[in-house]
Image 1 (cartoon, rainbow, N blue to C red):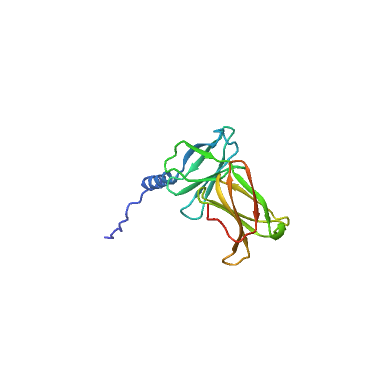
Image 2: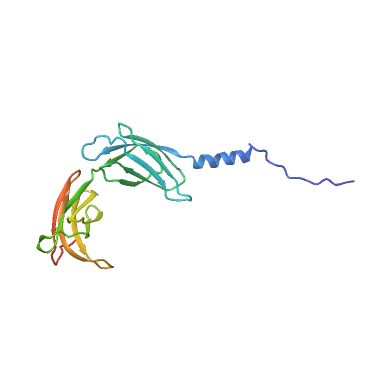
Length: 207
């Protein structure tokens, strides 16, 4: 008598295999994050603010984008099984970066209006100093910006968080440039703070 080979039972597609696949799809299915972007000072909605959610784990990197409506409200997909950062930005405002919540819940993001520092660097005898690097640093605001003077010695540093800054002009290049002029500047939201720099031999401590 011919023996018959035994075959293990197979699970039809759509049974337990299908259920496992569906469970996996539900696991990575994103939730929806609802939020609102407001002006930090006035409380008014920031219309058209750009909202970007960037995944910081996994490859390739993925980003989801949205924009605030006329009431400052936005909705964006949030992955449940990935770490992500939420970046909110708008013209004339300082960008805010925060960790995306693990559970989608209403979120309010308050943007501060950016300030600026503008001025002129003068060398010996009041002659404009061109092509000099100018750096503004603030420990309180945790912010830093740099730029170069133009042919008339003028410079402008935009997009600054409000706070007190030390503005320093550096002479020379290399790993240890020498500070040739420095001054403090108090930056206010939505305003440009004028600063006049004149070359000297010593600099004050960092703000």
